[in-house]
Length: 347
Ligand code: SF4
Image (spheres, rainbow, N blue to C red):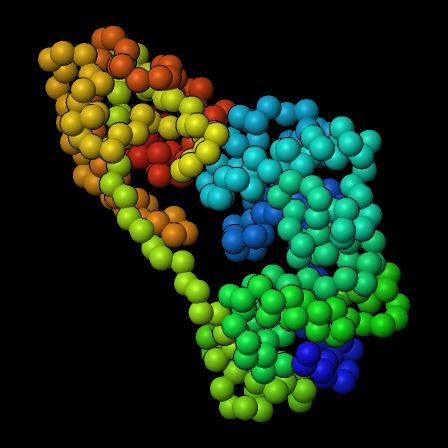
């Protein structure tokens, strides 16, 4: 195992105090509900985007019981636009489990937190460290980058055993004393370093507080870390979207997506894998109007979306129901569908 550099934790803690981020709305609290909510939102999403969503969620669901008591539709609706909707579904399930199994109190250790839906090992460690001062290491993508560079850790992180060994050294690098105050600051400091100094490209080594103990910097090529060989293959898929409006009042036909797969649990225009399949769901003699297609980029997939408009007197042969425009604000809609409807003047 790589040896942790001397003085690393103290450097991170000192730097966080003077140069780190200290005034985000989910900081300066040890309320696990607030910290958990922010940590889940911040996975795969920029701070600047999360700020508004976080405020809206807290205003609507001020505590875990309020969130647990909401309907999944309401949670998905508030989440609409943040993407990665499995996070919202797990958020809701987790709140329910905290209420039903833990009497409305979040467990106080990383191990127990990690047993809840949607809370992985690193998120559990962040909550336990921020709220309860537990001496436990986080290892999200930003922190992996910082630590592999500091250690010049050149083992392939696609191999589980190598990732385990990085976890072990991350644990060794933690501060040794003053857990209640020092651990939250150290954890935040690592996150801040990864987000603002040790960026993926062009790390700002010259102003970095751990430069003197960074083996990657000393090697002259810190950007070669972390090493991860397995890349997920991107795929592409074409989908046709039926934008059916009811003659007379302009209500739109929406269906709830299945609980797995793309846009799971959200309300959506009926989706077809070909234009022929879409046309087959139409009553006879309905005129179809093809709208310009566009591409929506998911993490590992490009969706080529082809909207097709139809004005109907009867309902299409597709599951769903008519929704008037004023009902849509309360529905969880995928971002591209929301945009599409807004562009056609229906929202
Ligand atoms: Fe990252 Fe450079 Fe700091 Fe090393 S010195 S941790 S490579 S920013």
